[in-house]
Image 1 (cartoon, rainbow over the protein chains, first blue to last red):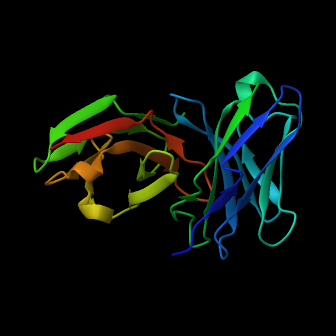
Image 2: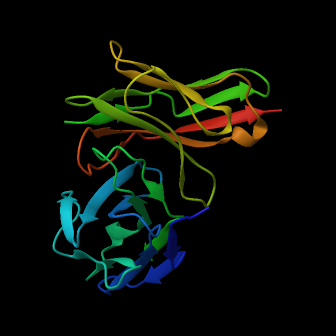
Length: 116
Length: 114
């Protein structure tokens, strides 16, 4: 069964450093998302991406964040200068295109980001 | 604004008994409703969804959920719980149309005891 994969599973970085989280969505999916879950809190939407551009972003997704689909398979989230409060589990998700967009989103296993 | 409430942090049930995990929502327009499950150190796994039609939807692993428009609820149910059902369950809502984001509830931890 096809699945979303994410690397690395755990990333430790120093405050102020840049990190890139990588995702490989399901191959025939066209919509891509990033969510995050701070320990003990709810899953929060960060950004959605379609047709090589951001379709929606939350207030969390400020200028320190960027997303890219550098080739036909990868989808990346970059944090330019990490802060302590960026420590969280980051989930990538993808969904297919069908009708009015009610298809479920399939999630990857997550990358745990720890900022020291 | 869209929101999802899961009023119980934890639900405890004995194996073999029926289980219910509650969810209420607030969204403008017609809601699309989802349940996801998260096992330790794993991502979110899709269980089931309500888009339109029959208010009772069936999903993976014997789970089902009932959409109640008047009560704006979408409770997750299973007739007979298994110990292996123990996990964190998330209810989510999205607005109809397009590629809209999911809004998640805080999650409910289900503990099924032998």
